[in-house]
Image 1 (cartoon, rainbow, N blue to C red):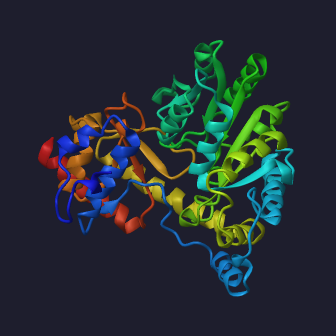
Image 2 (image 1 turned 180 degrees about the vertical axis):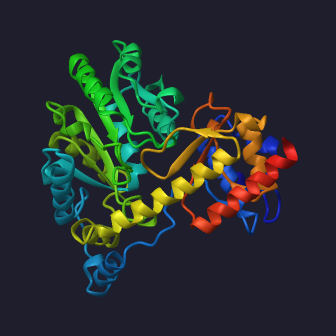
Length: 398
């Protein structure tokens, strides 16, 4: 992290950012550190919801602390009631034939993906990963000794994951296919036709599908969210990743989950037992309240994000930027080539001069040199102000 080399008040320079630019995760954190040095910065970088955790969830956590339940040990795999609630929701909402023993509660999605890669992949294995992508997968795959094979997606069809591109990337060493839908960073949702065809490829080649569905509750019509594990014959070869951070604005509570056949969950649990052990009981009781309580807040949050996305789209169009149509999540992935400034330099200028934090596309894959990922996790007045500041920076440098 850049904080190891900078005292308060010192500024991260472009050259120092370039030194970490090859690692998307380090680049994002370095930009966030720079934003932290700017008091009035508008942060449109991280994907952490700015909305409040629902009150009934907070109340459940408080009650667990006050009545002593938070002091008691919980199973490594998670509270039985929470595992059952997650399983019930996946059966009802996603059509996944899952039972309680098919669920592992994790310390956020980050731990889930790390445990998964350590358990599933062997040195020399290949895993197919869509590009652009959330680059935390890169390090988890690398630490497992496996090889990441990038599968291109294209702005022309809104970054859909084409089954033909997946098929072209399969080799005898391929063990798994990663699907992230809705996508971070593109907000694309994989179409039913491609998802069905990819599932058939997985069956034909005996591959595991990893389906990252952390943004599943934030899909905007006419797009539809389809869980791979709910397709015929796919539960046995699919690992579904989900969580509470995005759905219920609970990022800091660190509650993720993995859904997969019970024997694989048992293997994951053994690795978790040897590393972090069970997730905090307080967070689990809060998640239980979220999973079993009123869900109207999710629809409310979804409408807020949809309106913000529309505001951002119109503002970017006024700046002369093109973008993929956001079908889910809360990002706009925009092509800033019309600025005449590479995205890496543009993101630095926007932050240093405009006090707006936006991640360059190169933080999600090295070839995305003209793209920016904009998070809409700020109130609408702040989004409008950010667009105004962006226009000012562009006017000075175009």
